Amino acid sequence: MMMAARISEGAIPRESMLERAMVDAAWFSDSHRATPIDPGLSVVDLFEAVLGHHPRWIKTLLMLRNRVAGLVGLAIAPDATIRSFDRRNAYAVGDMIGPWPIFALTDTELIAGRDNNHLDFRLSVLKLNTPSPTVAISTICNVHNRFGKVYLFFIVPFHRWGMRRLMLRAVAAGRL
Image (cartoon, rainbow, N blue to C red; front, side):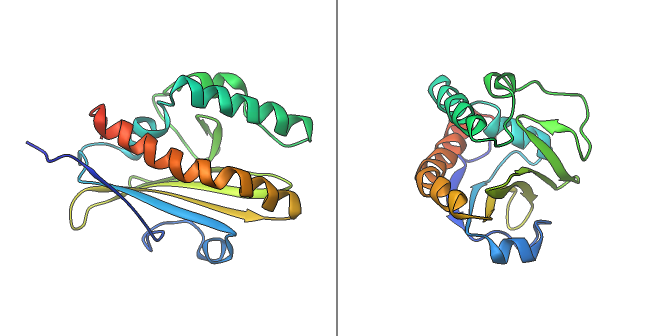
């Protein structure tokens, strides 16, 4: 019988394929870990377990944010990608997973994100095996202008709270 997963926050793992220059230059970064996890889960399983199960009220806020962002000319994902996670049989670099394109995909890491005029965003789902099976979900944002800084000023507190909450929900539901 596996023990209940524990959630912690820390530095972005060195094992990540996130570009080190991008990590070092990030205006914002965070990394949340759940350990131990089911070692049989793939990185796509882990992505879906945490990011494919937003509560309805968070989905509503995300769609509202997208409407406002679209009005100022930012690239946004269709509402359908927020309303439900449609799992595909296979993924490759360039495919969409949820609302984001995949930038890198291996057996141990999935990196998705989006580049925009105000900031570049990357999300890493990294499967680690030491000292016990762990998932690290890391985020980096590189801002390009004042709008990016203002945007993150408002988003970061919700992001930190929300990511931890999504991971706790995944644990409570037995998805990790």
